[in-house]
Length: 192
Image (cartoon, rainbow, N blue to C red):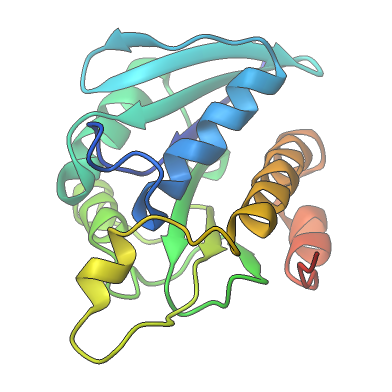
């Protein structure tokens, strides 16, 4: 049975719950919820395991904080013997509007500390990632407040819709691979 490692990036603790930066956790939670999977506290992460369409998925929410995400990713890749192609990292993306997601087989960290940590730890940027557009609607110098801020009430319905679709993209990635899933995911424009 082939194994996949799905990593939702975020920061632990109530202060960060529901923030834009924690969307990776929210997507991981939604995937687990849909499949009746529960998380347990384990080494460097909260971990859930599920089987789907003959594949095994290990869902990981690192407890290392964003800047050290690579430690948890490397540990779980090694422990579960996961190949790079079967890793999927879910992350917030300032450079994309809220109406978009981007699925890529590789790419730069684009200034994202979680991706930077993973790249430095794995010594490659050649791993799949699902970027969840959070927009960049903030005044100059307020990026940190925006990223660590909570969604506006007007944004929440679209965020929830996108989270559900991201769960479908993860399932598709596991079932039919990244190329075909990218074709669908990257052309979508999310609206209410």
